[in-house]
Length: 133
Image (cartoon, rainbow, N blue to C red; front, side):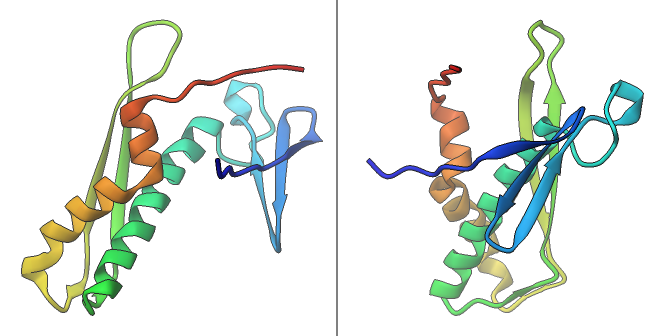
């Protein structure tokens, strides 16, 4: 079974750092929540992961059909539920663009990207999470 593996290392008293190939990402909490404010919170990165994965699939679907999209923007909204433990109760992606060479095909591209997105599929199906030392 294929897998994806990443490693976080402590970067400061409140943050972790991912170093991967030629870039790095810091995960932290805002100062107002006791962190150092050096990066986004993990939940925000979860939303970025969903949006980024979705966009990757959207671009692939467009390229496979010789459709050119320019100025793509995706607004990702994660609504936090009232129950404890806290979790996102819903995630919404709203896509817009400056230009699309075949505008009438854009809704179809959205559906294709949604169905092909590893992150969206994981959230829809649920994934077993194990924590160990």
